[in-house]
Amino acid sequence: MIAIAAQSGRGLTSRSGCYNKPRVLQRFIVILALAWFAALGSGALEYLHNAEHAREDAAIEAAAQTAGTPHGHEPVHDDSNCPVHLQLHIPLIVVGCIMLLARLGLLIALLALVAAALLPRGVPVRIDCRGPPAR
Ligand SMILES: [Zn+2]
Image (cartoon, rainbow, N blue to C red; front, side):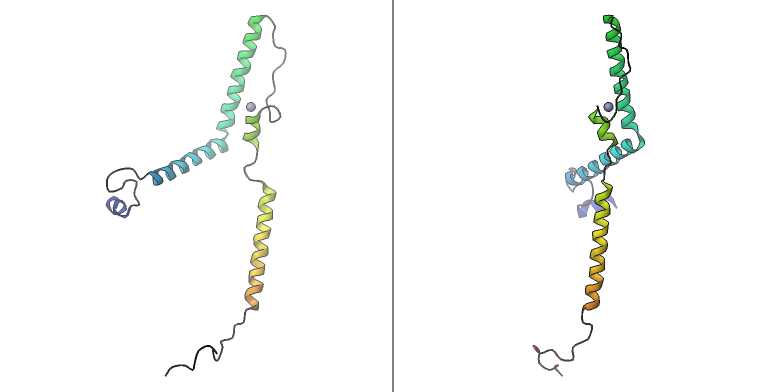
């Protein structure tokens, strides 16, 4: 199987044994995208980002206590003051755009059905550009 794939050029390695770079690159991009969506969907990225905020806040609080000016309030990190939070919470696909595209697709499918119904279905008895059928 591997020999067949290598001979047809579809395997990971070519005949010379070098890596087939476009195939490896395509698989790397797919694996990277899957890992990104898994991390984003499971909330791992947000958890890591919140942990980073907590570490920064603790460092600021510790610096303020050593300076003798304790920080009075807990800082709030949300979509309004953190661009990373905003990017983590923004929807990947705008729903309104998808609904518009679906409706346009339905309209095109309906028009295609109407156009197919208007096409003549009769078989011509004689074609003028050709002579009589050969015998
Ligand atoms: Zn943030």
